[in-house]
Length: 184
Image 1 (cartoon, one colour):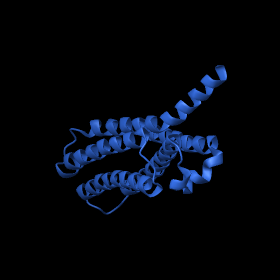
Image 2: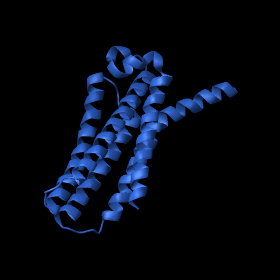
Image 3: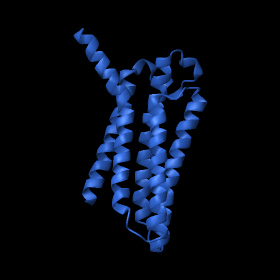
Image 4: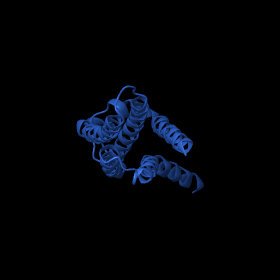
């Protein structure tokens, strides 16, 4: 069962990288403005949506890689008491989720970009994820209960896949529009 979670995690991270690369390739004439643009590069609603979707996809990718690597390192810590290690692990994952939400929010504010449905849905999913992580922190880390561990494991996978679907929505809609224009 552990292999399922490892393979699923790597597949999700691979697709997140592909989504960011697709957005950068598809909109190569705006590549620098996606990374470094400000309010002056946001002239239309479509510009706001593109920038917001890019910020969401990029932030999801960065934080997913960061939190996955952090989780792997925490699990290998030696010399720490079992309950303290569990508490540290779940609190660290919760902290990563909150840092992601803060980063996405402040990147939009700094950029002067409105929140697209993609960004809002990413934040909603993040709050679900952080709630799940706090439940597991209390259940497994404080009370030493395994009652929701299976729910937690599959819940994390489902929420990560949901986040992937949310950030993939804009590029997929863009491809479908392009295909429909070619057929017409």
